[in-house]
Image (cartoon, rainbow, N blue to C red; front, side):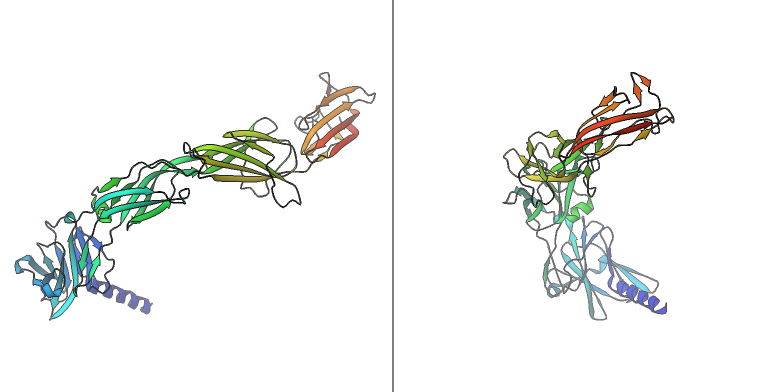
Amino acid sequence: MKKIIFLCLSIFTFLAANAQYQVAGAEEYGDNLTGTNIHKVFVVNGLSGAELKYTSSSASAQFFYYTNSLADKLPVPAGDITSYTSGGETIYTIRNLIDSKGYYAVESGVDKLAAWIIDYSLHHPVLNSITPIEDADKCQYLKLGFSITDDLSFFGTTGVERKVNRKYTIAYENLVWNDTDKRFDQETVTEENVSGTETVIEAPLLTTEFTLSGDQFAQAFGIDISLISSTYEAVATEAHIVAEIEKTDGSLEDIDFTTPGLLFSAPAKIYFDGYANEPTTQYYDWRIYRKLTGQTDWGTPIARFSDREFYYVFEQHGDFKIELEVANQHSECPSIAQVTFAISESALDQPNFFSPGDSPGSNDEWRVAHKSIVKFRCTIFNRWGVKLFQFTDPDKGWDGRYKGKRVNPGVYFYVIEATGADGRKYKRSGDINILK
C-alpha cells in the first residue's frame, strides 16, 4: 500500500510541476509540442480580458514574450503583471496578452517552459470548397475533396515552427438498414477529426449534400463556420430480403434466415419482399436456385422474377438459395442479397384410433402426420364399403361424422394415395378404431 501511495504522490508532483500555466476559458492544444519547450498552446476567442496565470514556488520571477524564438524576446511590461502568494506558492497573472506570442518565466536565471497564445478571432479558417469525387470504386466509396485556408503556426523557444493541426467535421444524410423493423431509416452521419485535403467515406445510399464545418476551436466556441457542397446524386445500392411463410391456417409468419438449418415442409408458400434504397435503386432481379444432395454448385436458376415482391410455392425437396440483385437506373452498382433454406424429404404416418366426442379438443380428429406431401387424397369407409368422408388436404382430418352425425364406435377403414416433394409415392390403407 505504501508503494501505491508513493507512486500516486509522484505522479501528482510531476503533473503539478508541469501544469503551471492556465488561461480561463481557453481551449488547450497539446499536439506536436515535443522539442518546442512549450507547455501548452492556449486558444482563446478574443483576448479582451484574457489572463495568463503562472503558478510557481518562487517568490520572484521575470516574464518575457517572443514571436519566433527567444532571440527576439521582450520583457512583459511590469504593469501587466500582478501576483499574490497562497499556500507557499505564488500565482502570477499576466494581462494584455498579444496574439501569436510565446510567454515564459525566468526563475533564478533559469528559463522555464513557455505558453503560446492564439487569439482565434483573428485566425478563423476559410472553407473554400468541398467536392464529391467519384473514382472507379464509386459503388463502394466516395472521395470528398476540400480546399481550406487555415495555416496557423506556433514557435518553440529555439525557433522551431509547428503547424496547428486543425480538424473538421463532415455531416451528410444517409440511409441505414434497420434490421429490427425491416426498413431503411434516414440518419445524419458525421465524420469527425477530418484533416488534410480529402477523406474517403462509404458511398452514400441517398442523394445528399455534404456539410464541412469547424475547425475544432470553432465548434468549442460555438462559432458557425461551415460550407455546403453541391448536391450529390447517389449511385450505390444496397439489397435486403424479407420473407414470410404461409401457415396452414392462412396466416403469415416471418422467416428468420439467421436460424441454422432452416427447414420447411412442402408445399411451402413463401412471400418474398425486396428492400433497397429507393429511388436510387431502379431494378430488381430475383433468382431461385435448387441444389440436391451430392451437387457441388447451384447451377442455373430454376425461376426468375423482376418485381419488387413475389411469392413462390416450393413443392420439391432440396436446398434452395434465393438471390436478389438490385441496380441503379444506369444498371450500375449492383448489390446482391441472398438467403438459403431447405425443403425436407417426404414422410407420412397415420394413427389407427381416435376418440371423437370423448374429450373435446383431445384426440377428437383423425389426422395424418406428414412432411413435404404435395399431393394427397384420403377416403374413409365403413365396414360395408360405404364412403363416409374424403379429403385432399393432409393438414385436415376426419371428425368421425357422416352426414353431420357422429358414427358409432367401431372399426372403419382408410385408403390414402399421396406424393412427396421428393417424388415418393404413397399408397396406404388400414383400420381406424373409433373408441368410446
